Image (cartoon, rainbow, N blue to C red):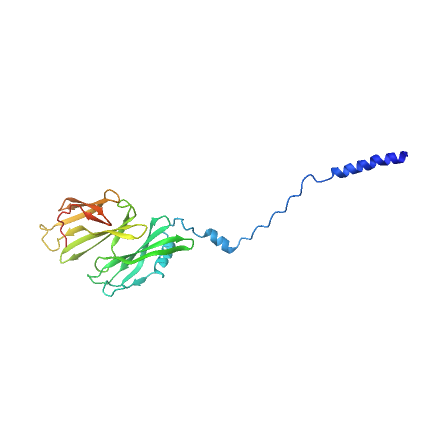
Length: 263
């Protein structure tokens, strides 16, 4: 009887020890294996996003934009749909201009024929920024045809004239001693380029046809007015005048046009 009494406490102690050896927490789950990084995923991470601004001065970006606009690298030759409309134009140089968020205008300079009566041109394409580069959303080849000797007009972008970036293109020529220059004002609206003023007379000289004492020289500068509503042209030299152009519908008309000598 004494031996049985001694064994009973030992059994109880072993049972309690077994209870104390249970784990206090469940074991942590093994981490899930990470997906392998593929070449396609790496390229996608480096691809430009649709709304990401681009460096418009980057030659590779401009080349990419030119191909998206024309479907081929430069130079390209554009011939008008209607025969006799104007001469064929060759485009080899282009500039990328931001229009709005993710939208760009490619301004291409066109070379015409070699004659005095031959005009040059500007073509305008609208391009949307995409993950792959650019997508053409609007095309106006030979949008502006003007000038002499086949040379494309000189141009720049003004931000102070209208609500959207504004292309001001200038050209000119000399005829029998009379030299004239003019400008075209084109607003690059988000929908399409719009010619606001087809032609502004900017300069005049008859020094090649008259004596030095009789020559008339006039030059003009386009100045900002009330943005999106008016602009001004200030003339100096042998004529001192300021002409105001006011927006009427889709175009700007002169309010008080003086008698400006022209060729």
